[in-house]
Image (cartoon, rainbow over all chains, first blue to last red; front, side):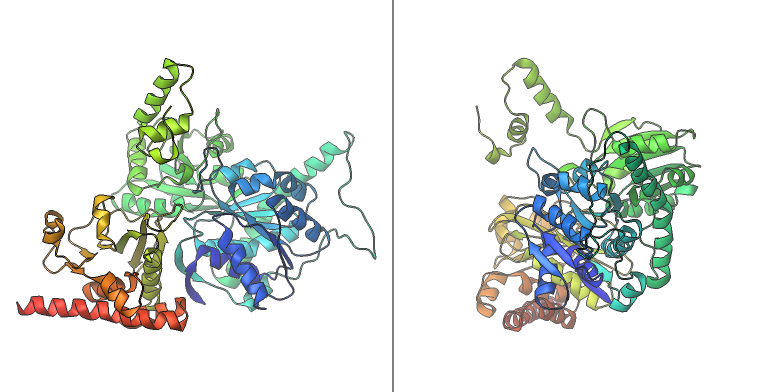
Length: 418
Length: 193
């Protein structure tokens, strides 16, 4: 049924259609509305046979997910930013123990400096944690991919994280097509756990593994993620068969095979790029987009193929590894090393900075003139940076950089003069 | 695509207005999106919200930079924020004020618009009359419908009924109609003149 609702409500309704049995949660912006709405659905009796627990912290939330999933329950939670960091130890355990938990990450920056707005720093902080990490471009995809996530998690016995841009998607009200319970039941069978803590058939999960077997256990985790590459594609196709929509999958090309210059990106910025690329193509330019929908597992072969005819790939990321640069850019570079593709890394949208079509157009126009640097920070205020650098050179006691910059910009409320 | 930017202050229902507008457009079978300017919302702080309406799916996520309709819910914002930034002066402008653009000292801006595309109306006073609260948003939505015909009254009424319990929805629907009728009246007067 078509509805005009926020991304958070759409995801909560979709999760409820997946019949979760345990939902532990600890609210943190921008995902709060998701778990809040699930709690309403449980309380009103609309979502039956579901235990909803508002726990005391994110660490407790993921720990409870681990216990519930190990006991054989379909388990869901959501978090963001510092909340994810606070549950980090349990995040690694969930994947190490191969528990099919589904978690929404309402993508948000990580402090310090304190920042509640959107970027992908939180997702990138767990890129090596062994979870499957999927990204969505729109609220329709967000709800569709959550339904796929449960099936994927349970097929593989691996936790799946659905990344949706905080605020930009969670708080946006758009049209979505909400599937029926019958459709979801047809796609997602009841959960049969691969391993289950059961007093009738006792076993233990979570053995200590020494040097003799640790490599093998870790290799198997890697192997399983590689298997997921096929399963993600199969399930997206199966999903399309039942629901009639192209959501999920490994990558999505918008003219990428047929373009000299291609934006590579993840998440909602692909939507803004789509509008720009349509305009540019009408103007006769050979441009396209490659949207990375599965970040873990990383679909290196599919990316390599999709970019086979590309001259210049512009990798746009909403986060970066400080002291190294764009993480996605370096991974794309590795995936396409056999091809002769020029790669530029563009870092933008950090801490919620608006990504305008105008700024993206400038990037692509400078690529057309072969003037785009290999590393660019979108809309960086160079004078502000230079001023602070000069201050630091002038004296050892230049003070906290964030406060200095806010003062320079006239945002004085958060800083004090010294 | 028709793009709307609403400026106001926290507590004036700016975000709700953009949501109601998008739901009303949806009710009429159009594609629409709405979202707020994100921040640590608090009472009285400047707030913006955005809406887009189109016959085709909308994919862009950037805030509305060039609004075809600019709604100013609080005229004191003229001193705090450049509310007119990027405004499409072929479009429309609605200002919550009992004063004329000349009295507000913004005629340099408003003169750029076509005749009858700029309207001021005392929406807070009307809101106090109809909903007993200084929330001018639904008055201005009615005015929006009258001025642009982008959405229409039945869809707005349905959107309000869907969002609010009846005791809040009913006075707001009356308020929306009052805003609508006032602008229709102003347009008719302008035509006669």
